[in-house]
Image 1: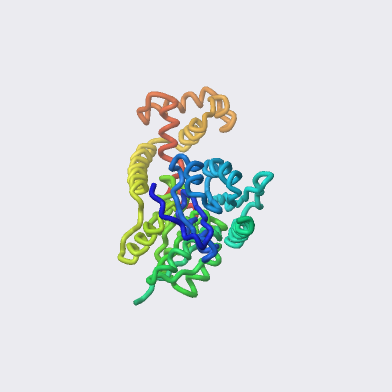
Image 2: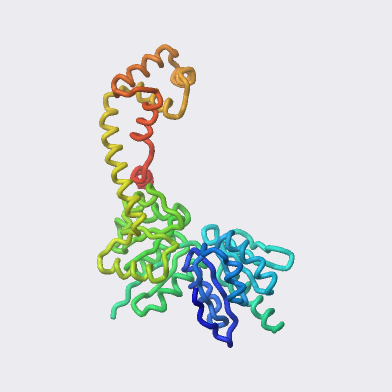
Length: 126
Length: 223
């Protein structure tokens, strides 16, 4: 897969999703705070792809992709958010493991705050 | 240029916001949102949108019920969509009055193309769902044929057959209908003879084909 160079001025958020419209929602939630790029889920070596891309944050919409993205997120200190659209659940990977928000809590505001906090934290360490 | 107004009726705020973000980038769409059936009714009354994208799980009673109630009363083209679609669901939605059915896993460009197609009078239905629809229509024809054959059964024989289709044994059927096991056996023999079926299992399958709910049946119940 050929990936254009990211805009160096903005943090990069990779959305690896089976529901492409999720990427639109992430873009809307971050509104210029980050460069958002969408990649189809189920492509195979997601962990390897993320190590190559080195995004500052990752959003996934399936358990499989979440499992594959965990190691990269831990190694790279990247924010990892798992959004399950059918049951409207959102969970965020923290140092101690996944923090799950209550059912039905997956809102654009929650998504924005989860990603923005992680991006700011990562930005301050750079 | 007149913009196509679209109401996104879905109780998932992230999903709604994604659809809104996508459509608002296009100059030919105006978007509003509805979280529930009540919101959708209000949006239709106030804005008379051209298209409503209705989630299959729209609260409180689901998208098919919503379409069944609204489609006969308004000009808005209803498109039902969901993450997963079954043959009966697609058929129920279309029978309820939906103009088409889409996967929520549709690509952004696919969604825009589908909505523009609706404006031109096209019915959006992905290829795999078209196959499901055709299978569903064939299923309906088969059901009608089977139902025609079932008219030879008496009311009591039909009751016996209904219990057989649920796996009941003769003794259980006898208890349920307050008749003797001997009478149940006689009814079973008559059923197999009248329907020209080889076995009890075939009779059970016959009953399920003829009388189990399908998509249209669901719509009949909703209406």
